[in-house]
Length: 299
Image 1 (cartoon, rainbow, N blue to C red):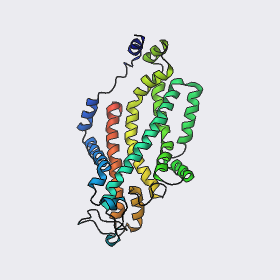
Image 2 (spheres, one colour; image 1 turned 90 degrees about the vertical axis):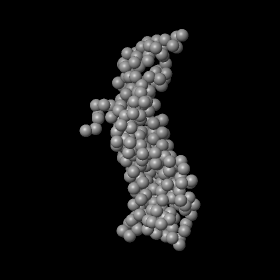
Image 3 (cartoon, rainbow, N blue to C red; image 1 turned 90 degrees about the horizontal axis):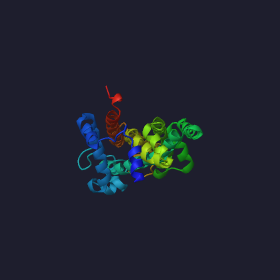
């Protein structure tokens, strides 16, 4: 009975939860958002069904076919072949899975690390807030990609290490976002009511602070998924990410850069895959921002 009263008193009536149906309708009503959703859907389908829809799955996984090296787009190789005769379309389709998984892993870890730290800092304030924020400022003093490169240089190259390095460099953004929300809510009446009836601080943070930070975190995470795809591809391009013969888009762009003048498709199509993936998440992220914060509607 007491627990029920606690929930009734402490419920954040000023910040009601977003109507999922309204969000979906708003996404579908925006033409740019629809384009983004289509691009994301294609990426997800390729990641989930890659080995079954790729025309040459063995070549996509790395099997060579030297006799058909550097064939132009057309015929049975719609997007051409690379220097080892592997079908580019199959390589790009199979490259969707690691690109999406790495981006989801990086953003997920960044949220899990940054959001609780930011919520605690904003709610508690004082020296703890100062210490956590100075730590985030220390990480933010370095460009994320540069910091990731330094971490990978210490750990060694590889897709998993690249994901860990990017997550370490990405969490401060979520800490700052959540800290701002928590600082604005800690003196609100529903939080004061929860404190006055003895609700533990960890429960207030978990049930009343973090849920109110979901909207800005969701917007940032949607955009960051695309940004991480680009960052992971950049690391692979300079040899600090996925290793051959992995079907990685950044690695394919790197391998094809010496053939760019004559065999443009070698780097062109993997680069286009990265571009369209980043574009899709950015378009959806912009619409989500407009939905959750009408004051920032696009002009």
